[in-house]
Length: 311
Image 1: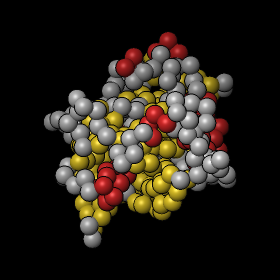
Image 2 (image 1 turned 30 degrees about the vertical axis):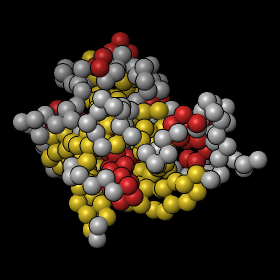
Image 3 (image 1 turned 120 degrees about the horizontal axis):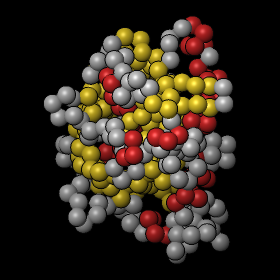
């Protein structure tokens, strides 16, 4: 039986495994398959994906390492809401208590300052580092977009839809689309998300797919966003996406350098520090429950290794 934890940041929920205590999990489990199984909200635990808390690599000064798999089994470099929960799991269950905690991710090592209540980590500020704005580094295939007069805005075309978007890398690729906050648009956002979200994710402009965000700029320091997350679909929150939204908002003059960003699952505070060029994200980390999984791991981490009865 394999112990697991369920944590979420504003409803952006993942199943977490402790591969620090049991390092063999990285090599004995078929992690993409397991991610697909546990994420299923009808036949599994239900989540936006699977995250492992691992030992850092020998060349790292980090306290722990994060591996993140989307609900479709694809691996991503990092997750903004997920990394806050990684810090919580490390702090609350493994007594990793430096403040800040340094978490190694596929997008670099992130510094996480946190607050506690009754000895438990409850909220954290993640230094997400500087945004990536060069299209080839995000990555975006510029040949499949149309430039506009604005240096940070391009036009995407999907069938009869043509709309401007701003592309930002925050350890993973993001396409930010600002939508006028009219009553009709506010009411129709779910239809817009489900209609265009998967088409944008898989648009030929994005060789690694993309996270698509539809954003209402409500004031210079306030925005609301809805996300279609690559590999997972609609999510309650996207931390790296909220960072990308603020950066895109600054670049297009929709937002100032600090704003509260409302997501379906709650609110994040985002700041793009002008001096350091780093983006800071502050939000909660919550443990929902823990349990055990019946697993049947294979020695090479292929084929089996997902949820199933042991024989």
